[in-house]
Length: 370
Ligand SMILES: Nc1ncnc2c1ncn2[C@@H]1O[C@H](COP(=O)(O)OP(=O)(O)O)[C@@H](O)[C@H]1O
Ligand SMILES: [Mg+2]
Figure 1 (tube, rainbow, N blue to C red):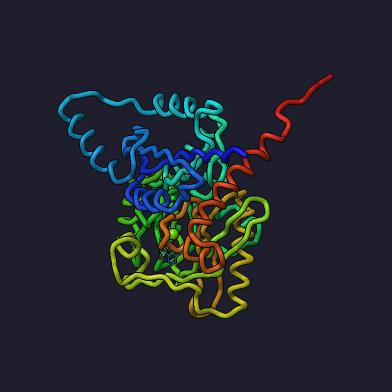
Figure 2: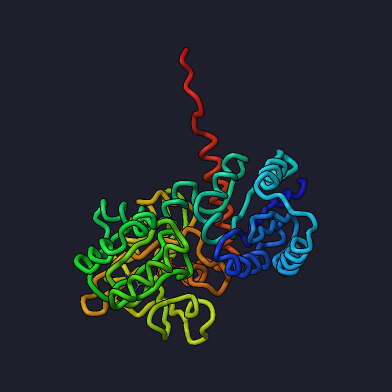
């Protein structure tokens, strides 16, 4: 019997996003751990400007980005962005020659938010993770909360505004926040990650500065009642019948889990499984599946919770549809603890991508009137 051909996996990393650097770490780990007996990996780096660099590994990518910057500033070739990306994906999707599946190891805007997913849908390529709508909803904290609330899922009280309204009537917004939420509260851009643009505020002056900062990043922002909480996370993996992992907890020393605490402070750590009662674990696992299904997610998501210290009330904070994906991060650790080691997790993510694509292909595309 002829040996089975290896699957060709296109691995997208980097990206035109404020979480570019985190993607490089995730991608390096995924490439190292994808089973070489099963897959031929074709890495595609995307620069901060959105230029696609096919065939480059994360380790070579940083030098290539630096080189591009210096050649651009010295007036040499300016690279194309979107048309190049589109041509590339169409070329790569030629049956029998191109990629079998794409693994977007991209975090944040232009990667986790449905944009790249749309491109891959058009190119008819199977891809790991959520589809367009799930990705977009997972990214938009305002819309996700709206759906969670409408289903009776527990979320923290919040208000959201467009930055254009903030520019016209800031005092009205400050008044509304003080009247309806009080202090302390959290201000955050609607569609970012890694705590970028997130601030904790205690008074009107701080609120004004925090909103001013958040609108630099996004056209919408949220203000949310601050909860005195523990932070717990759960991994969900699957398509229509997802599995849910154990619950893990994150620990940090600062005021909240900010960018420094997430990626730089060596005192931050995670504990798997979290030390909470079995009843709370079951409630979180149940809510994690509810959140996954409410937003029409598929493939994977990490669902993050706040557990209020005084009341032990659980709030869903957010879902991350492309969470950090190194072998040491919470998503992978939780899967590993629940019986799926990292390399097998990567296999399963690819399988789920292929299953979802095959399922969509079986659907009728047109109605025959005759
Ligand atoms: N309402 C809140 N109450 C308490 N802490 C919060 C609240 N909102 C955000 N935080 C803190 O800020 C961190 C980042 O906020 P989050 O909404 O998760 O944004 P991101 O998508 O950037 O991770 C949280 O992990 C938590 O530490
Ligand atoms: Mg978060």
